[in-house]
Structures are given as C-alpha cells and as structure tokens.
Length: 59
Image 1 (tube, one colour):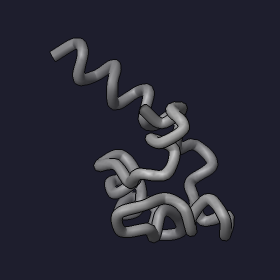
Image 2 (cartoon, one colour; image 1 turned 90 degrees about the horizontal axis):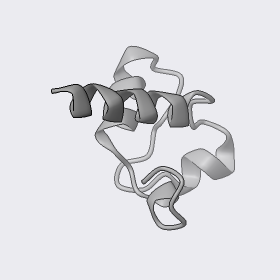
Image 3 (spheres, one colour; image 1 turned 180 degrees about the horizontal axis):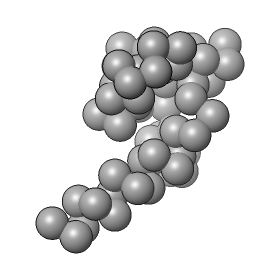
C-alpha cells in the first residue's frame, strides 16, 4: 500500500508508531501529504511498512 499511488498519501499505523518511537517524523493525522511535502516523513517509512507486513504475514 505504501507504494500505491493512493496509499502513498494515506496515514498508516506504521507511520503512527514511527512517530511515537522517533518524535522527529510523521506528524500527519489522516494523510501523509504534508509529511512528504515538508520532509518530515521518516526516511525509512517504506522499509518499516514492509517489515510490519512481513511480521503480520508470519502471524
């Protein structure tokens, strides 16, 4: 979803968790638009998102 044209703009629980773990990133509420535009999206967001999906798949 983080690579989908629409999914790139919708906030996820992964972004929320990274925000709390590293309070320097991911300030968006429902959308990632401003984080992407202002450079406050975690540089490792896509990696964290993929890892969270892999953990969920393993159960």
